[in-house]
Length: 243
Image 1 (cartoon, rainbow, N blue to C red):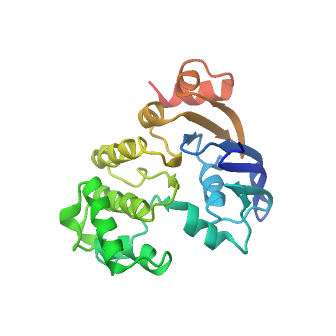
Image 2: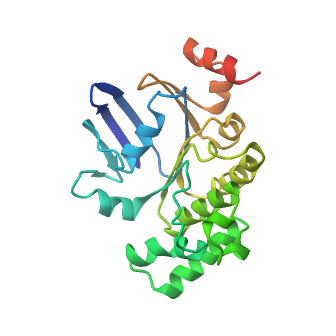
Protein backbone atom coordinates (compact mmCIF):
# COMPACT_ATOMS: atom_id res chain seq x y z
CA UNK A 1 0.00 0.00 0.00
CA UNK A 2 1.66 3.29 -1.09
CA UNK A 3 2.00 6.06 1.49
CA UNK A 4 -0.85 8.58 1.64
CA UNK A 5 1.56 11.50 1.09
CA UNK A 6 4.73 10.95 -0.94
CA UNK A 7 7.31 13.70 -1.33
CA UNK A 8 9.89 12.77 -3.95
CA UNK A 9 13.18 14.55 -4.68
CA UNK A 10 11.60 17.89 -3.83
CA UNK A 11 13.59 21.04 -4.57
CA UNK A 12 12.52 24.63 -4.09
CA UNK A 13 14.41 27.74 -5.11
CA UNK A 14 13.54 31.34 -4.30
CA UNK A 15 15.72 33.08 -6.87
CA UNK A 16 19.25 31.81 -6.17
CA UNK A 17 18.33 30.59 -2.70
CA UNK A 18 18.06 26.79 -2.61
CA UNK A 19 15.55 26.25 0.21
CA UNK A 20 14.61 22.57 -0.21
CA UNK A 21 17.28 20.13 -1.38
CA UNK A 22 16.13 16.75 -2.68
CA UNK A 23 13.66 16.16 0.13
CA UNK A 24 12.06 12.71 0.29
CA UNK A 25 9.35 11.88 2.82
CA UNK A 26 6.46 9.44 3.05
CA UNK A 27 3.53 9.89 5.43
CA UNK A 28 0.96 7.18 6.10
CA UNK A 29 -2.75 7.90 6.35
CA UNK A 30 -3.60 8.96 9.91
CA UNK A 31 0.05 9.49 10.85
CA UNK A 32 1.05 12.48 13.01
CA UNK A 33 4.38 13.87 11.79
CA UNK A 34 6.04 16.77 13.60
CA UNK A 35 8.73 18.67 11.68
CA UNK A 36 11.43 20.28 13.80
CA UNK A 37 14.59 22.21 13.00
CA UNK A 38 16.23 25.63 13.25
CA UNK A 39 14.74 28.72 11.61
CA UNK A 40 15.47 28.83 7.90
CA UNK A 41 15.81 25.06 7.54
CA UNK A 42 12.92 24.78 5.03
CA UNK A 43 10.23 23.37 7.35
CA UNK A 44 7.42 25.78 6.44
CA UNK A 45 8.32 25.73 2.75
CA UNK A 46 8.04 21.94 2.79
CA UNK A 47 4.49 21.85 4.13
CA UNK A 48 3.48 24.78 1.91
CA UNK A 49 4.54 22.63 -1.07
CA UNK A 50 2.25 19.84 0.21
CA UNK A 51 -0.67 22.31 -0.04
CA UNK A 52 0.80 23.80 -3.26
CA UNK A 53 0.89 27.25 -1.66
CA UNK A 54 4.44 27.05 -2.99
CA UNK A 55 5.07 25.35 -6.32
CA UNK A 56 8.06 22.96 -6.21
CA UNK A 57 10.96 23.88 -8.49
CA UNK A 58 11.48 20.17 -9.18
CA UNK A 59 10.39 16.84 -7.75
CA UNK A 60 6.83 15.99 -6.89
CA UNK A 61 4.21 15.69 -4.18
CA UNK A 62 1.80 12.77 -4.52
CA UNK A 63 -1.35 12.60 -2.39
CA UNK A 64 -3.41 9.43 -2.34
CA UNK A 65 -1.85 8.33 -5.63
CA UNK A 66 -2.34 11.64 -7.51
CA UNK A 67 0.55 13.97 -8.29
CA UNK A 68 -0.04 17.62 -7.41
CA UNK A 69 0.29 19.91 -10.42
CA UNK A 70 -0.37 23.55 -11.17
CA UNK A 71 -3.48 22.40 -13.05
CA UNK A 72 -5.06 20.22 -10.35
CA UNK A 73 -3.78 21.73 -7.09
CA UNK A 74 -6.93 23.69 -6.20
CA UNK A 75 -9.13 20.66 -6.72
CA UNK A 76 -6.70 18.50 -4.70
CA UNK A 77 -6.48 21.04 -1.85
CA UNK A 78 -10.28 21.19 -1.77
CA UNK A 79 -10.44 17.42 -1.49
CA UNK A 80 -7.53 16.57 0.78
CA UNK A 81 -5.87 19.29 2.83
CA UNK A 82 -6.33 22.41 4.90
CA UNK A 83 -3.73 24.63 6.52
CA UNK A 84 -3.56 26.30 9.93
CA UNK A 85 -1.28 29.32 9.57
CA UNK A 86 0.99 31.14 11.98
CA UNK A 87 -0.97 34.38 11.64
CA UNK A 88 -4.50 32.88 11.80
CA UNK A 89 -5.53 34.28 8.35
CA UNK A 90 -9.13 34.91 9.39
CA UNK A 91 -11.32 37.29 7.39
CA UNK A 92 -11.74 40.37 9.61
CA UNK A 93 -15.00 41.46 7.95
CA UNK A 94 -16.72 38.13 8.69
CA UNK A 95 -17.98 36.71 11.95
CA UNK A 96 -16.40 33.58 13.37
CA UNK A 97 -19.28 31.55 11.91
CA UNK A 98 -18.80 33.21 8.53
CA UNK A 99 -15.10 32.33 8.55
CA UNK A 100 -15.93 28.69 9.21
CA UNK A 101 -18.67 28.30 6.61
CA UNK A 102 -17.30 30.17 3.59
CA UNK A 103 -15.09 27.35 2.27
CA UNK A 104 -17.61 24.52 2.75
CA UNK A 105 -20.33 26.61 1.02
CA UNK A 106 -18.27 28.18 -1.80
CA UNK A 107 -15.72 25.46 -2.50
CA UNK A 108 -17.39 22.25 -1.37
CA UNK A 109 -20.95 23.30 -2.30
CA UNK A 110 -22.42 22.39 1.09
CA UNK A 111 -25.80 23.85 2.02
CA UNK A 112 -25.80 26.77 4.44
CA UNK A 113 -27.63 24.63 7.00
CA UNK A 114 -25.08 21.81 6.82
CA UNK A 115 -22.15 24.23 6.88
CA UNK A 116 -23.57 26.06 9.92
CA UNK A 117 -24.19 22.77 11.77
CA UNK A 118 -20.64 21.56 11.09
CA UNK A 119 -19.21 24.95 12.10
CA UNK A 120 -21.06 24.99 15.42
CA UNK A 121 -19.93 21.42 16.13
CA UNK A 122 -16.32 22.43 15.43
CA UNK A 123 -16.62 25.53 17.62
CA UNK A 124 -17.95 23.39 20.46
CA UNK A 125 -14.94 21.11 20.03
CA UNK A 126 -12.54 24.04 20.50
CA UNK A 127 -14.61 25.58 23.31
CA UNK A 128 -15.75 28.67 21.40
CA UNK A 129 -19.40 28.07 20.48
CA UNK A 130 -20.33 31.24 22.37
CA UNK A 131 -18.12 33.30 20.02
CA UNK A 132 -19.88 32.32 16.77
CA UNK A 133 -21.25 35.83 16.13
CA UNK A 134 -18.13 37.71 17.21
CA UNK A 135 -15.61 39.23 14.80
CA UNK A 136 -11.99 38.04 14.91
CA UNK A 137 -10.63 41.35 16.22
CA UNK A 138 -12.71 40.90 19.38
CA UNK A 139 -10.95 37.61 20.19
CA UNK A 140 -7.60 36.95 21.84
CA UNK A 141 -4.79 35.49 19.74
CA UNK A 142 -5.33 32.07 21.29
CA UNK A 143 -9.04 32.20 20.53
CA UNK A 144 -8.36 33.28 16.94
CA UNK A 145 -6.02 30.34 16.43
CA UNK A 146 -8.58 27.94 17.91
CA UNK A 147 -11.10 29.37 15.41
CA UNK A 148 -8.55 28.75 12.63
CA UNK A 149 -8.22 25.12 13.75
CA UNK A 150 -12.03 24.80 13.86
CA UNK A 151 -12.10 26.19 10.30
CA UNK A 152 -9.69 23.47 9.17
CA UNK A 153 -11.88 20.85 10.88
CA UNK A 154 -15.02 22.13 9.09
CA UNK A 155 -13.79 21.12 5.66
CA UNK A 156 -13.52 17.51 6.94
CA UNK A 157 -10.44 16.94 4.81
CA UNK A 158 -8.14 14.07 5.75
CA UNK A 159 -4.94 16.15 5.99
CA UNK A 160 -4.36 19.16 8.25
CA UNK A 161 -1.09 21.08 7.93
CA UNK A 162 0.05 23.26 10.82
CA UNK A 163 2.63 25.97 10.13
CA UNK A 164 4.02 27.01 13.54
CA UNK A 165 0.49 27.54 14.90
CA UNK A 166 1.62 28.86 18.31
CA UNK A 167 4.59 31.05 17.35
CA UNK A 168 2.56 34.27 17.06
CA UNK A 169 0.85 33.78 20.44
CA UNK A 170 1.60 35.20 23.86
CA UNK A 171 3.06 32.44 26.05
CA UNK A 172 -0.05 32.15 28.24
CA UNK A 173 -2.19 31.44 25.15
CA UNK A 174 -0.02 28.69 23.72
CA UNK A 175 -1.38 25.88 25.90
CA UNK A 176 -5.03 26.44 24.96
CA UNK A 177 -4.13 25.95 21.30
CA UNK A 178 -1.91 22.94 21.97
CA UNK A 179 -4.70 21.31 23.99
CA UNK A 180 -7.01 21.51 20.96
CA UNK A 181 -4.30 20.06 18.71
CA UNK A 182 -3.63 17.21 21.14
CA UNK A 183 -7.32 16.32 21.12
CA UNK A 184 -7.41 16.49 17.32
CA UNK A 185 -4.43 14.12 17.14
CA UNK A 186 -6.58 11.34 18.61
CA UNK A 187 -8.63 11.27 15.39
CA UNK A 188 -7.82 9.54 12.12
CA UNK A 189 -6.49 12.76 10.59
CA UNK A 190 -3.12 12.92 8.89
CA UNK A 191 -1.22 15.78 10.56
CA UNK A 192 1.98 17.50 9.46
CA UNK A 193 2.98 20.05 12.03
CA UNK A 194 5.87 22.50 11.97
CA UNK A 195 6.45 23.65 15.53
CA UNK A 196 9.00 24.55 18.18
CA UNK A 197 6.85 23.06 20.95
CA UNK A 198 8.93 20.13 22.16
CA UNK A 199 6.40 18.89 24.72
CA UNK A 200 3.73 18.71 22.03
CA UNK A 201 6.10 16.88 19.68
CA UNK A 202 6.94 14.34 22.37
CA UNK A 203 3.27 13.76 23.26
CA UNK A 204 1.59 13.70 19.86
CA UNK A 205 4.05 12.70 17.13
CA UNK A 206 4.13 9.22 15.69
CA UNK A 207 7.32 10.35 14.00
CA UNK A 208 9.60 13.36 14.21
CA UNK A 209 11.35 14.73 11.14
CA UNK A 210 14.33 17.02 11.71
CA UNK A 211 15.40 19.43 8.97
CA UNK A 212 18.55 21.47 8.62
CA UNK A 213 19.72 23.55 5.66
CA UNK A 214 16.90 22.36 3.38
CA UNK A 215 17.40 18.66 4.02
CA UNK A 216 15.86 16.01 6.25
CA UNK A 217 18.76 14.79 8.34
CA UNK A 218 16.96 12.57 10.87
CA UNK A 219 13.62 10.87 11.34
CA UNK A 220 12.47 8.69 14.20
CA UNK A 221 10.02 8.14 17.01
CA UNK A 222 9.86 10.81 19.73
CA UNK A 223 11.65 8.44 22.11
CA UNK A 224 14.51 7.90 19.67
CA UNK A 225 14.69 11.58 18.74
CA UNK A 226 14.75 12.97 22.27
CA UNK A 227 16.84 10.28 23.98
CA UNK A 228 19.43 9.02 21.47
CA UNK A 229 19.40 10.83 18.10
CA UNK A 230 21.95 9.57 15.58
CA UNK A 231 22.94 12.92 14.12
CA UNK A 232 25.17 15.23 16.19
CA UNK A 233 23.42 18.26 14.64
CA UNK A 234 20.16 17.09 16.23
CA UNK A 235 21.86 16.65 19.61
CA UNK A 236 23.29 20.17 19.39
CA UNK A 237 19.81 21.52 18.60
CA UNK A 238 18.26 19.68 21.54
CA UNK A 239 21.00 20.84 23.90
CA UNK A 240 20.12 24.45 23.06
CA UNK A 241 16.35 24.00 23.23
CA UNK A 242 15.93 21.66 26.19
CA UNK A 243 17.51 22.67 29.46
